[in-house]
Length: 178
Image (tube, rainbow, N blue to C red; front, top):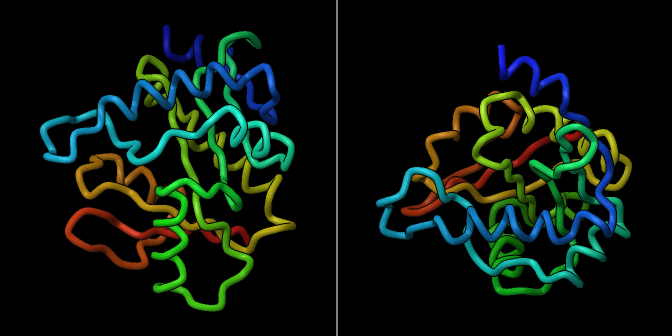
């Protein structure tokens, strides 16, 4: 019953500049939990953290959606990134180019994160549906990389992410928008 009450209190909207610190906090929590040796069960964001400047540009591009609890607390986000030049974004572009050469309308990076207390409530699916609708005029698909350690890979596949390939560490996935 508690989860049902929380679910009805979750709204989704485009991200704005007032959300930056909350998004950075959520990302930081999951980035710090990632263990490349596979000893963790929860931390699956990896790589270079986004900066405030990166997030501001993503917000200005309308490439982020946030989930709010009771219209106040940011409890999750989904962003796509077609411009950052940090090492992780460059890695994503390299893999995308190798897997799908000549695909200019595929956004090369995505990141979704939900606070642990709010997981399992369908928030990632709602964020995905919202963001797909808002970016589908600019992109045909979104590319991402998912850790092989991530036990939520079936959830990604259920949401429409297609596995393009994998290596020893990652799945390479794409979400069609059309």
